[in-house]
Image 1 (cartoon, helix red, strand yellow):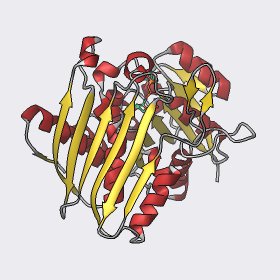
Image 2 (spheres, rainbow, N blue to C red; image 1 turned 90 degrees about the vertical axis):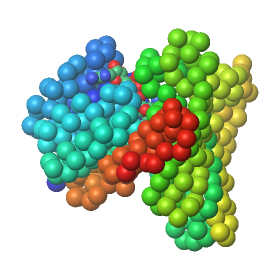
Image 3 (cartoon, rainbow, N blue to C red; image 1 turned 30 degrees about the horizontal axis):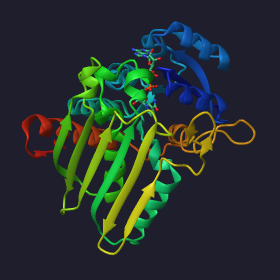
Image 4 (spheres, rainbow, N blue to C red; image 1 turned 180 degrees about the horizontal axis):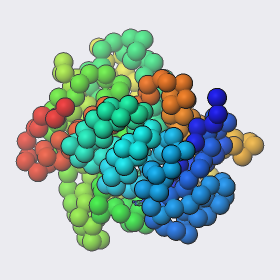
Length: 338
Ligand SMILES: NC(=O)c1ccc[n+]([C@@H]2O[C@H](COP(=O)([O-])OP(=O)(O)OC[C@H]3O[C@@H](n4cnc5c(N)ncnc54)[C@H](O)[C@@H]3O)[C@@H](O)[C@H]2O)c1
């Protein structure tokens, strides 16, 4: 069987991981790199010996391309995703699948109709502590999940310096979509309703109409309830970009994960807690949970297996976050539109 011919649309901070994974994996090759930023796109294309285009329709029009990653900003997944599906490409979409439930549903239905693989890159499902947590739930170590908490937050560096488009997203899409998926995956019941609060102060003062934080209480079918919290204004004096914890208590036990501290602290000019999981091994090859879901996607396409994070799961996370936003606006609990 030949190598899967792939492309990446959007090669910024995260999309370049997709380009690297396709180029390094023995079962795939990177054929196109597409990015509106010509300098960035050309540089990455040249690095991996791929072709460059600023227009994703050119990728869609190449019949030799079989699978495409979409890693454009949160609000800009839908159009390239639908264009690729219409051209018969299998797609791996960065989280969140879309920033509106209706759009996510549209992508899902189009993929079903075209019979292409649609996977959403919820890479934390490959993150070792969460894999172990999932096993604990599956094997009954904590009984039936009852009540939980998940926090994924960033320092203010992320919306103000790292992302150019933070004003068109928010902690609820960039961060909460991850923990909405994680907790739905762990609890493994249908999320039914959300009551959420949020505040716009600090980032609004910096000219961005986006939430500083969103906190959302999600109740699942059968009564289990988890609180999701994402904040985008933590101080830059923290030794790492993120805070990431989960807690899940069940009828017979509980799980607690501290996922931000990865076991190493460096005190140089500044105190830092570098990311080491999902980075490089001793030989300069990528390893860990950043590229594993990308390899999984390649395997699913080549071997005809359904992906572990199918479009339905992307739709679910988008619906939870969208309901949280409506709950904030309406000041009351809201049913999740699934
Ligand atoms: N940064 C992270 O740590 C991280 C982690 C996981 C997932 N993600 C997800 O990955 C996606 C991208 O985030 P990012 O941080 O890499 O953003 P980014 O701004 O660094 O990169 C986005 C890239 O997409 C390009 N782009 C925008 N519209 C385009 C279009 N129509 N056609 C081609 N290129 C286009 C931009 O020029 C840019 O290079 C988001 O959905 C984000 O939630 C990011």
